[in-house]
Length: 530
Image 1 (cartoon, rainbow, N blue to C red):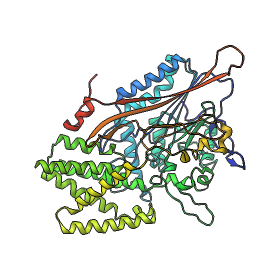
Image 2: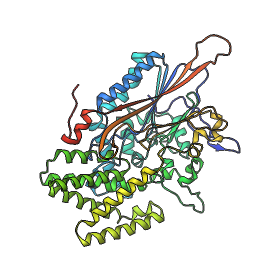
Image 3: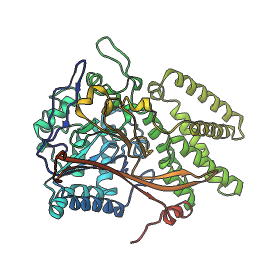
Image 4: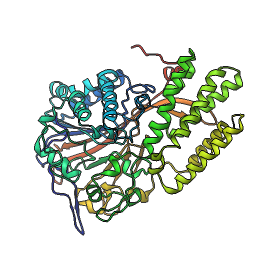
């Protein structure tokens, strides 16, 4: 099994008409039947701030579906793309426990300790079954359906970039998680990944674990995908222009030639989203659960809600949810001690977040001014007593929620025309399908791209349970499991004017809800039995 095999590449360059990308697979005309499967945003966590990942049963069903399709279509080659954020190094209590955060990389020894601790807990304890199935997939497909080659590609997300900062952790992920010996990664693959990141010799040393690719493209499948963080200003870092280096921000769009000159800093450096996810939410969950345990609070419903706060997107929705719960508890006359712990800890975590230099360094000047004013307002309201700071927070979060509901969730045509697969300079690759994850919102759009055959934009959503707002009021836990399948098959139909190959794709959404998920809201953690 390789990360990326059968790759033809060219040196990245750009001229007036065409641009070329390293690592684009361009299979020959004599290839056999091929199947591409793509999923995104699994977010395998260490379980320290709630455990919301899919069960072993769900993964087994998914792998069985791949096997069945390989048998039905006599597949010779499989490309399995895991499109970023497969593991989640951010959503963990280990940062708060150790008193160090993902943006404090200069504290090398402490940072390394936490990163290695998290990845080992993910691979060895929480998700053994997933990684075992992933490593066994090539052999199983070969033995049971005759597949000759399986290529597994894991692209870089924004919640797994901390791995790239520590060679020990990254090597462990390759060898123990994926079953790939670092020393066995070929020089051609190392050179290709090096060129992708701007230096062909970057990973030339066979003891060095290379970075995960930033994108994946295959002309046989007419498919190009990347995680999608390059469009999100909260989860990519704006780089100012310097004398000898260009600058970049999300408004500049897709510019890999610029990113290479910057060493891909916009996506490797810590960003504002990290401070919200790890600095506020994960720290809040950890501190509240610790204090509730200290007072022997065994409220199963409350513990369940705390465990699932990590499911809410965006993060402010999680804070709205827990404040709604404390409001209901106060109205019911229950849990006064727990209410005080939750509200005091939330205030403390937000003030601490607003006191970090990194919070302001990683955001815009305008937002920085607003955050500083917000901090002063919260401190003043706290000094007045009566819980006014919590009331103000609740109202502010409600205003944000209403504003976001008024915004369009779909992607505009003008945005889609700037997606890399649809840019005129890459038209020679003849990509027709562009995939992304990142947003956790499954989408499918059919944009009109001038000069291109019918095009499709797919967002894979997330392979975790989600908390959805019900109409009018309330919440419900639901899973939306989306996978993209692309078939690149030999056309065996006889007759004139028949194409030599057929191309087809389909999206499979498994939407799940039921008593088990609903029961979590009342009774805490329970396990299904099959």
